[in-house]
Length: 201
Image: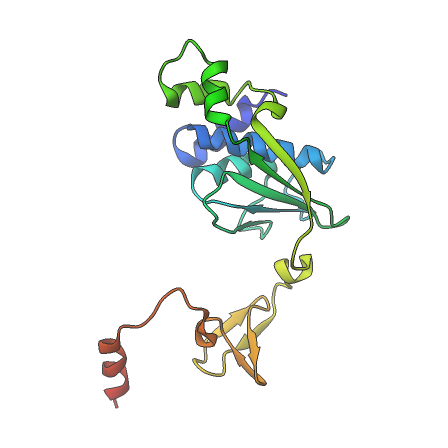
């Protein structure tokens, strides 16, 4: 398959082309192939879970048409150039990752290029899948329904009052809480600001 149109699509999203975008495109195509599905065409059938963010994800999106905005792309940031591709109809899932020695192999495939970055740029476009990627059929720990949830469902957190969408609330001792109020927040309010808020009439 000629991947150049997909690389051009990815580079437009990112303003330039880099090795991780190429990996994203190659991994995305391999994921679709593992599911025995053709081009996605923005179908909701395919769910992709990326294991890092950044330019890699632009490559994945270019190859699969899965996006965060369409709720067909999720990020579990493990800092790895890998992704899992799920067929939401058959429930089959395949994790595609880079081979452990991919950088060393890139230097062999682009032996005339002494600069590592440009060797990767060149080699990642032409290396055979079996040389650069590993594919493992996996089982999800959570159901597809709980991962995707149902859009349009809204409840209020009984602690902070903020709206919670897409069934992301937590029920704790019969009380509906958002993840922050349940203790799973990625942020905290500085004590000085909390004192100021509580002192206002």
